[in-house]
Image (cartoon, rainbow, N blue to C red; front, side, top):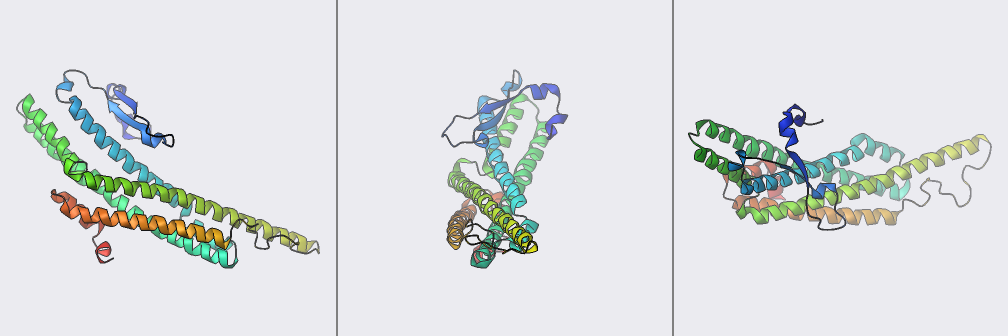
Length: 292
């Protein structure tokens, strides 16, 4: 209901099937095993052969993984958007741990922005330079096809062009593997950011409760803080040791991301298709990564 599929004919929707991929581990989620397939009957099976449908499945799985990563970064932004970060810095735990936490929150936000720049440009390239351009060319060839053989060959060229330009060709296996590792690093970052901001929000809430408790006791002419209480309100939740642990994890994720991104960018000039070199220009138009 939330996609363009709602405008398709009932016969088209009835042919759509949900396919569960083989399980590879106990930690897999729905994103890892879900796929779609389209049931084709004669005479369309003459054009949409089993080999062609396998190529469609490869393209779908790649787009599905790309959408998963993009969705994760958008969800992370909702967690760490600027007004949330400002509130945490204003209301968070005071002291050395609070100041160190503010610095890590800024680093986390910066890294998310860099990841989003990469995914947004990659997604734009795939959707418009690869899929839209290939479909426009295939549409013209369909109109010009004089017989069934010409249509079948045009369809095969259409799929092969998508695979080659979309980093899925036989000569792009190393590039594909590197991109898959980049996706995994970004998903790791999403889990780390959620944990860091959950702890920061919890600590900020405890500080607010502690300040409220102090004010209530002061109105009753009692001591604001009792022996054994954390005056900052953290109740031991946030410490310099915890911030150091978070900093080490963020350093590791940032280093892994930079390493895999540099490897991906270094492989793009070696590809034979000119559009992949255009992707390099989009990702590094300011030559930031080249100078780094």
